Image 1 (cartoon, rainbow, N blue to C red):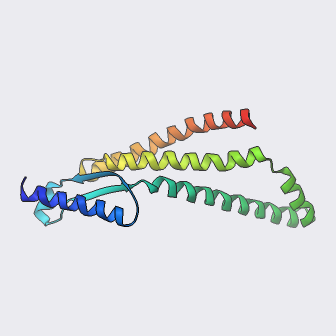
Image 2 (image 1 turned 120 degrees about the vertical axis):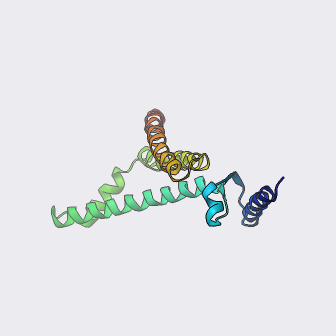
Image 3 (image 1 turned 135 degrees about the vertical axis):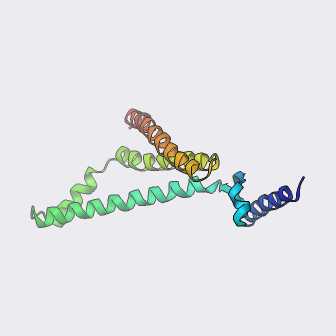
Length: 166
């Protein structure tokens, strides 16, 4: 192996050690050789993806969904109180009574599944990118298209399953 290959291996090992130090398992590691990097003195990049990336996005998406639901309910309260002159106790009582367990399960299951799909497709496309900036653009477009189609298909099956169960 050449000294350049030794340097790349050291970079990959450093990334793996860093991931181990912060208690994350890298699920992918790609070293990109950039021919123009030698000219300007830029070292190749070692790209790693943590296994926690998908789970973190799923948790954040579920929390954002809960926040959006709460803001929507507060917005409904403001409109019903200001425009319809509805009693606040009556609004909140009816709002809570209208909540169904199946609706809540569907409302919180879908965002988690969608986040896992989007993060998995995005990580895969990001690790498989080749061809410099044009490759990044193509990979981004492919990630958006593939994840959109996967989310549509998953939405259909999750809805069917949730309607069957609840």
